[in-house]
Amino acid sequence: MKYIEYDVKTAISKSNLPELDYAVNPYTGCQHRCIYCFAIDFTRIAEAREEWGEIIYVKKNLIDVLRGQIKGLKRGITGLSSITDPYQPAEAIYGLTRESIKILLSNGFRVTVQTKSPLASRDIDLFSSHRNLIDVGVTITTIDQRKALEIETQTPAPSQRIRLLEKLHNSGIKSWIFIGPIIRGFNDSREEVEKIFQVANANGSRIIYDSYSPYKNSSIFMKNEFRHPIPDPRMNCEWRTALDRMMLSLGESHGVKVNSQDEEWKVARGEGLGKLAIN
Ligand code: SF4
Image (tube, rainbow, N blue to C red; front, top):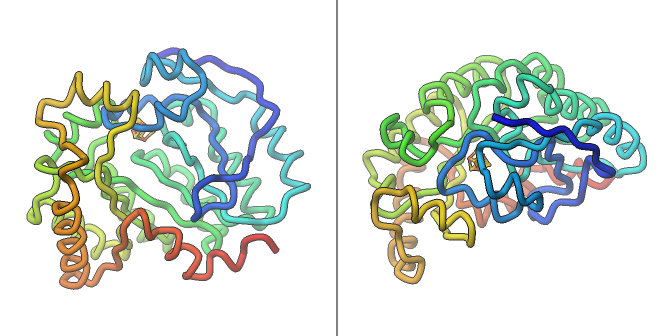
């Protein structure tokens, strides 16, 4: 693993995602190296893009820049990160995610985290000090470790992510589970998805889900390494309707709130999170 430190002029930027006002991305590139990853297509640094999972660019002066920049910003919902995993192994060395969250929370910004890493449990003390301003999302594509290894080649095991959810729940931190991507014929069976709903129910998490869509560079990754047929998006319409129905029915039978990624922003804003934004 190669870490390359560099300086940035901007630490926090306006987000293009409707559920977020801002995004902070401390690391460019992601060591987790999921083969379906589409962050590759949103990565400007060619070396990080071309050697995905092997080279991480670290925004060395991020904290100083963020401290200065935040003074002139209206408060809003901030995603950490919006592109790569903020708790990938680089975070254990550099701590940029923790420091960013600390600055954002102490300035009254709402923070939403998404990760696949149990390293996030290191910061439960910080989350606990601002419970009303933070939520933590944990991605679980499948509970089956063997399958997870096929698509998430350098990523903490699903069992570790479940343990993280338990710790968050026990500490009273609001959590959610992202099931995605759901790949037709791979991790879309009712039996398999139901196990994730059981985890959500046990930990008071809601569920957001999305299906697989190919992107330019990420689809090359999938083509080279996915050992199953890659679904053709043109054939997805009926399957997607059936998937939506299945998710709704599982949500009802397990008492878990569930919505698709497409609808996520309406939920985020509708739950009052938006009230904090742009004061
Ligand atoms: S954790 Fe997210 S950003 Fe990192 S490789 Fe996997 S899909 Fe990409």
